[in-house]
Length: 326
Image (tube, helix red, strand yellow):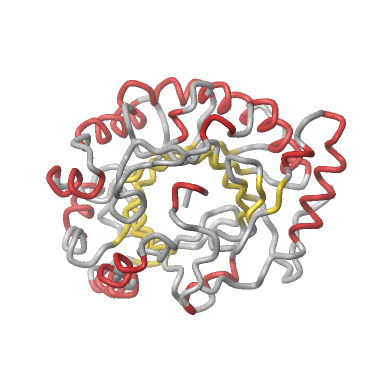
């Protein structure tokens, strides 16, 4: 089998696929003023997605995460899940969502073939949730998680962006929530983007602070699976759930990178904070182009840097996280 391997010898079994840059939330750290110039109507089609996912599967990718923007805003969202899940070699079809109307929809996502679910929840306090997202929908989101677990999904991951003086005092609240539920809360360091440098400077908090708090409370770090994301994950014998920490500013963060990204316009982006993407769309127009597409993916991968340059203040072409799915 052909492999996806870069110059540093890193393998890439994990693809993050954005299917739209449109989002209906107004999160303070991403789109505080809403989404003004989305390219939603020109996003890659279902057939283009099938060809793309098939090419990555042929290269050894076994996990595809569907993201946005908010991916459930696509009218063919169920068809996308079903199509990707039925591609030979794809074992994991994950969805990252803000949870909008998820309490009414998540069972259909599971029926379509979703195997893993990530939900963005930056606060478990309703007023703070509304302040951060611009929506009073916390109960709706939590109800969707309950339905996902009741429908048989073995676990759910929750993404929580750490923000100093906003939600940094909620660790115990999150720990209490996962004590008796198979939920992994992943605390993500706030990352600087082109649109929000001042917000970053004011609210960035190192995940190392939380790591020390967890260790003092008896949490221990777990072994990371090969196709896992970038989180350091922690467990505790008294808790059913887990805690993950994603710390992109930590030393050697990029050494274990195992994921590539394609945005909703069909551009392969080698890093969340790369200066540019590489178009694959001209090779997604026919099933007869698969070998050319595979060769192009392998060629572009050799341009991948061994690290990002966030620590130098270089945020690349990522003006906000909705354009590539975080």
